Length: 181
Figure 1: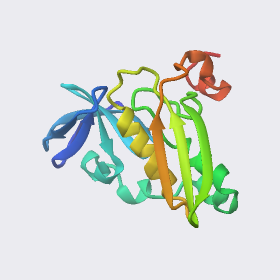
Figure 2: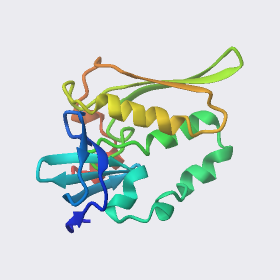
Figure 3: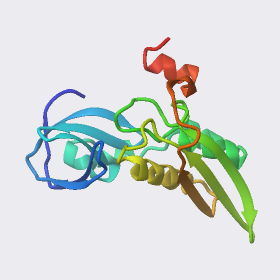
């Protein structure tokens, strides 16, 4: 982590914090600053960017090792669906903060319901700052992780702003990770 890496090929990325798409050319020098939730936050000469796990090979990361299932999620495959959803949400990260969205207190509500023989998950979440351009990206990450659960037919993740997020919403575990305790 913190060593310069030259991208071995062109990579699609998302600029942080704007959320704009960009292409990093082969040979671009990057530093991995965070690798959590299956994505990589990298520092470039133009600022921070997020690279998907599908492009891990361009960073010199072994994609096979990265594809290994999360042991805890695998152990929970027989747990109730709601518990599995919460566990998947704990695998979603703000690319600038090394704490998952659940422990950051960003997930306000998670409900499962049956609609026409389909299991639908509805999540309401917020962001640490309303102007963050990464909101749709983080919400899409949450939706994608939920959809990996067998038995879930649909997932909707809605960004909400009420109540406004504040640091008091961070869990004890999150506070410890951030060095606030």
